[in-house]
Image 1 (cartoon, rainbow, N blue to C red):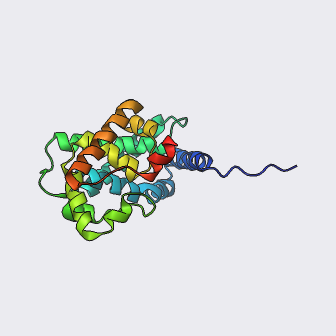
Image 2 (cartoon, rainbow, N blue to C red):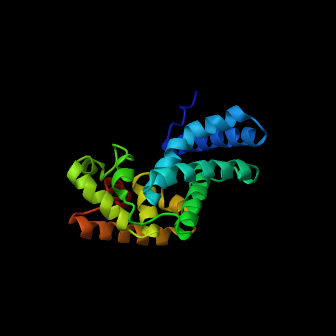
Image 3 (cartoon, rainbow, N blue to C red):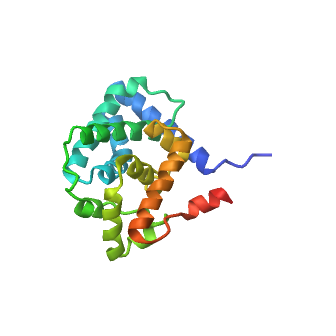
Length: 207
């Protein structure tokens, strides 16, 4: 009897990582079309991620380009047993940290216009609330005020949908620390906005 094809999210994620790893191998071997395909697959996602952290569109453009330069330079050392998404977002996050530490951005150059262009995925909370313009403005301002470690875990969880373990791999901290930082991020946002910042996904995980 023929077995049913495994179409679970984990299987799909694994298949995508294998495909990305294959594109990376071809890229480092000199295949320009493969590298263009990799940028096509991941460029918008990387840009959205760094934009949430840097809060400046021009800086996010530069950080995105620099991320893919690093990807090309380090492609030969990529361990295909790990998640390509985690590896890529870790490179992007480290570049963001470098920029923030160099003082390349002024913190008051605000979240308003930059974050307005990077909406939540429609299926995730608090996306329904962010869609409301007045709340959206308040939310973006509150998110911009979070310290980088808390803002990063919140963005990786709520915008990128990564697990605690994957976030830990991106940020070089244990999953328990991720949980603590996410709790504090939500607490600070809740205090600033006067609302609960839990999500349906976390409720489902605790069930």
